[in-house]
Image (cartoon, rainbow, N blue to C red):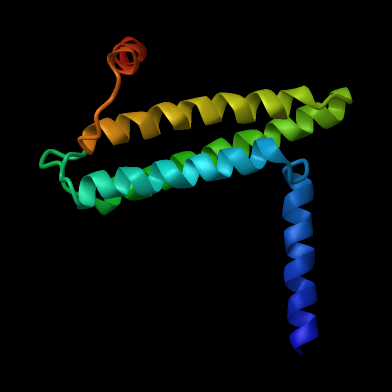
Length: 133
């Protein structure tokens, strides 16, 4: 029984890994950035009550769910990029998508750090303001 469960989990993991074009640094970085962004945004809302998503700045589960759905849609786009690479016989579309989404997540993480009151260099603040405009 235990071996059957482990085999099924392994097969499911392999299928997911294949669907995302394999496990590499780009996919790992994207998933780490997504996780850190979600956790940092939740901390800003739960602990610092400084979220820009709600009127009070406090945590709101609806916005948390929306954030997770957005991340899910980003992962669906990675799946589409993998298929484009497979059709064209390339490997750069998926990488470009992962890098682009990583940059977006890093900007969001940086914004969350600022909302938590962590001091930011002036150049970083100006860059964030320009990107938000």
